[in-house]
Image (tube, rainbow, N blue to C red; front, top):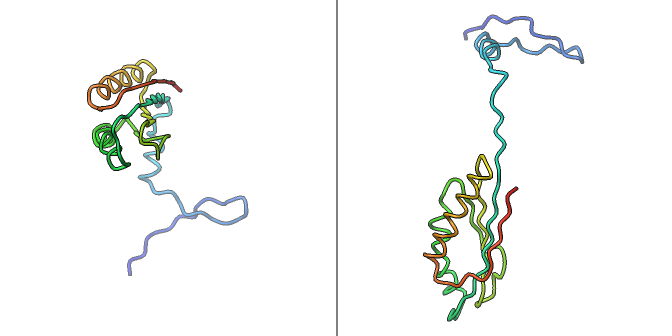
Length: 133
């Protein structure tokens, strides 16, 4: 068994000794940039209320909105979820949350998503609401 040289370590407030810091870790801490940029993410919420016609069961309703999950649900800056009217066959409420570095970027992204949803989903949009946090 190989033994490694041990330092004395630091003494804690309770009198116990902590293991010494490795030289590699000490160098990394010394090189650490203390003025790292602070990025405050912004969140945008887009809520769409849809009117559906001709859905006979929940399976047919899910089929209408399959693209919401499969297309926009896989985007790294978006989260998509049905947020209300889960059991209703004639309406649906879906929410898209977008994450970005500025309110302007979020607004542009939500505009893009809203237009794409309008052209791809076969349901009338009754109401659209937005909120930027």
